[in-house]
Length: 104
Image (cartoon, rainbow, N blue to C red; front, side, top):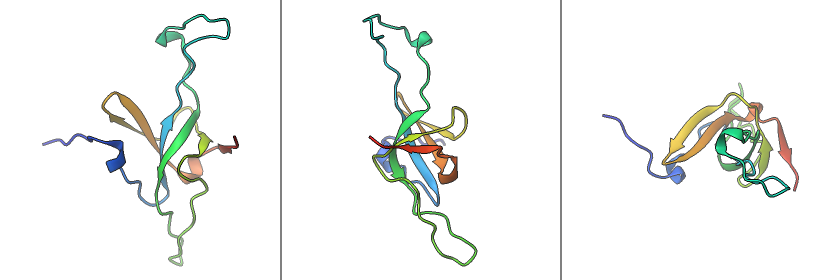
């Protein structure tokens, strides 16, 4: 029997994992031309929705996560664990997979 995730809020990352929603590419060019979905590139930028408590080192101490909820981050084009809730796609990445935090 399979279970379906009903809400993304029910997903709580463990250890050093981070739940990210990729940002969508602009559907309109600066000239006002609408682009079809097949012509839009997948961005390597996302928004952090939830973070785990952090990994544990050999001495049993928690290592803090380098990003927080609401941060914009750069993520690798490939990698992470994909999660689909309804029609929306999310990804789980480890803390060391995050490339950079974007300052707004």
